[in-house]
Length: 168
Image 1: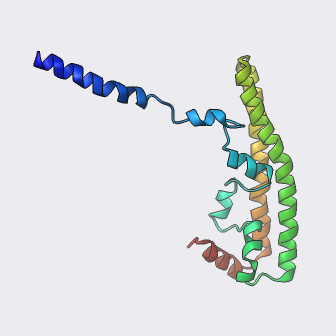
Image 2 (image 1 turned 135 degrees about the horizontal axis):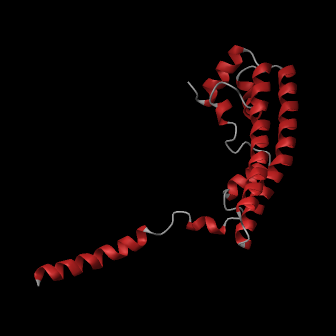
């Protein structure tokens, strides 16, 4: 009898925990405008911001145009260099905004496909190819801006940039 009471008590204690453990960590994502992207990511992408898409460049000695401009006075960027970086930043931002909108729209279309419940393998593949093509182009825009900016700076300026950004 004591064992049975203990077992029933243990079930009463474990059951709510087991039920809670099944609660999805993604439940709060259901209210997002684009379920696969945070609202902050959507805003950054639409604004032409990097949204961490250029981290391979940034973390491997390829300075980004936005941060070069922010820190230009701290590591002796010349007026000529500043002008070059400003033009690169403007071109990158314009292209990133254009492609970013296509990417976000493609992710919204993917959400819509699943909401419609008409998804099948062919439609899913088509939607994914579109979204990923836009995402790859967006990453390329941001990464190539880092490549071009690196060519505008001296080795000493790159070292100073790395130090100022906290990359040792």
